[in-house]
Length: 187
Image (cartoon, rainbow, N blue to C red):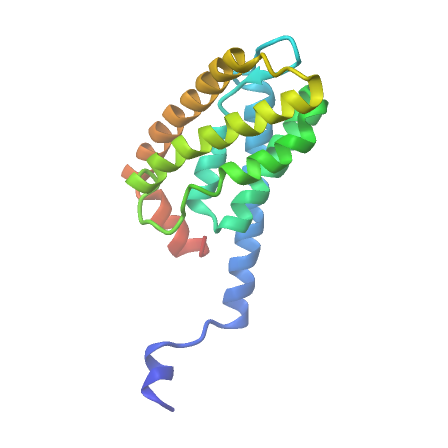
């Protein structure tokens, strides 16, 4: 047996299976929380085209700060699209794509949820969200002139979600939640 094997043991199949189940379960839990938060909690109708302002994106950011990128992308996409199916179905296909993309600027690779990278990431996510939904409105409704209302809605939604993300993330960071989840469940 070499010293490499002793110092860097390969994870067992059981450990890898447990980690995969934990990640899939966490992804499903985040998707459900994103759906409920987006569709029903602080859900404020906005504009004439069926859009609404919500703080569900804060949970997409949290999912991205906890889960590896592919899992976070699917939690956001599924949760957001399901919320739209329940409240504004015309947006569901676009939301599926946009919510996947807004999880990309956030990382789970840092020890803390709230860090410089993730704070900059929520700003980038707001820009992605604005561009995505503005293009969606243009395609669906031909509303090139709705730039100002779109900016106001995006600022309210993204700004509120960023603040909630920072508050929740800071609270969870103080409690050591991320390291506990990583050590206990491999997330």
